[in-house]
Length: 245
Image (cartoon, rainbow, N blue to C red; front, side):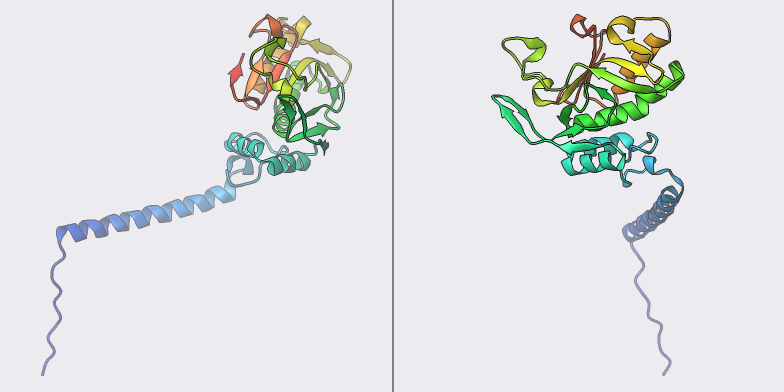
């Protein structure tokens, strides 16, 4: 007896539409996969969010995101500093009233004067990226030589904002800030914030460039453009509030 062909019921319009949608999604997934493979193969690591952050790489599309993640992670923060050749030693936690230094390191070879300041690891990380990717390029462009020394007024001071008797604590009370007063080049040329920030020549252009170049790395960057209290230094901190002026 001849066999009769099995006839399936016709697909509904809804089923056909769903099948088309799944087919389209599969095509998109394939394209995305191929694109991801191409990006991973050809894009530089600084543009890829899943590659490690490195001081030795140029600033790329993903650097800011990876920098923020490293600043939040004490272990990763230290790993990035070490991989980038930044020498430091661990500092014990200290508490003095409402002032406390936690998650701090002592920078040993960062061309800072006074030498070997204590600061939080996020502050040290921001300082390392700033000097590597902002200060030195600006010095070569404006001054024709690298910076050999960064002079500062300190990182830690158990005090309130502006030294007031009452009010909020300064980020200096947590070793989470640095006040930069001047820069000295390899040949001995010196640019001070107090004397040269308003200068129309190379010294002033350099100081204003490094102020602007600090803003991607630090939370707060305050200069003579902010108020008279900062007429002689650049205040750089990794506190909760953002400012760039």
